[in-house]
Amino acid sequence: MDSLELTVHHHGTPHTLQLAASATLHDLTSLIETTLNIPVANQKLLIAPKPGMQKAPFPPTLLDALIPLSSPKLKITLLGTPAKAIADLHEESASIRRRDEARASALAAARRNPAKPTPSSRAGVHTLASSSANNNYTFHRLLPLSYLPQPERSLAFLTRLRDDRGIRAAMAKHKFSVPLLTEMNPIEHTTMESRTLGLNRNKGEVIELRLRTDAYDGYRDYRTIRKTLCHELAHCVFGEHDRNFWDLTTQIEREVERAVEGHRLTENEFYNPADWDSAQGGLEHVDEEGWTGGEFVLGGLREDDAGRRVGLAESSSESRREILARAAEERMRKERRKQTEQGDQEHEVP
Image (tube, rainbow, N blue to C red; front, side):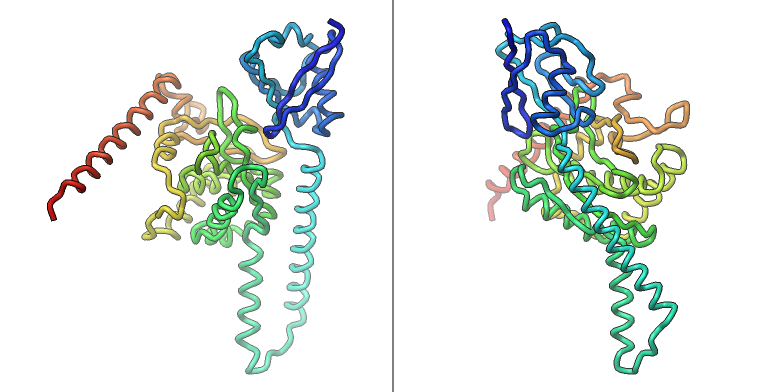
């Protein structure tokens, strides 16, 4: 055999690559970089059935020794963002930052040389100043992933988070101005050990949130995602998960809850009870770096003996399989109870 032919799937599209029979894993990732313009450092390869997730730096291991080339179940999924997409995000963030700096400069100049308002213009000047302040402390751009199903629903979800009265209040109080709020592609941030729920890029340059279920057939619980967002906002100030970070996270969560107190969740908030139960059951765990900043660990947090916050899945004697089974049983019990209640209503005599 003089050559190898491998199919690599990226965003649902198969790409056939030709390599020498003596090619290594490093050779494969280098070819991906030149063919798909995805830097090696940005690549992750999910190889099924084995050896699983591979991350940079990639070793010079022979492919025929690492991958079951003859297996009919072999599938290689590439997780990674093209260099151009990352450059576009940086340019968008820089453009918004320049605009905000120009606006702040103009406001500072106006304060140094205030124009004397006429009686008829006083109300208008006050309204303009308030509007500028509110517009500064928000998410300046919302970006759903257009290549995933129903991007319009993701945009509606992001809009609701941006306009959430609790999130608005917390961002205004702490003066958080985030250029971009976007959704996360679940498959690109899922391994056998963990699911990433949120990422803060460069201390507030971009915040990514996991909106969708793993199967892309629905959306996660609104409260869970809003809690994730509180966590990511705290990373705008503190990158490490130290005591200062957790104190700020708790403060933001309480501020959000106080602002929305008395307002009940509705189906318009994409409420998903099963997803909320899963999160509370300790099934979400994250241990992955962003560019700079932090990420969310969910699942019922406690402090370990060293004073660090850890998920229940890390501290519990139950295995992941046992936790999953318990969560599934609870969902089935709730579904049976719901069906019973519906049946009673149908047979009720008016």
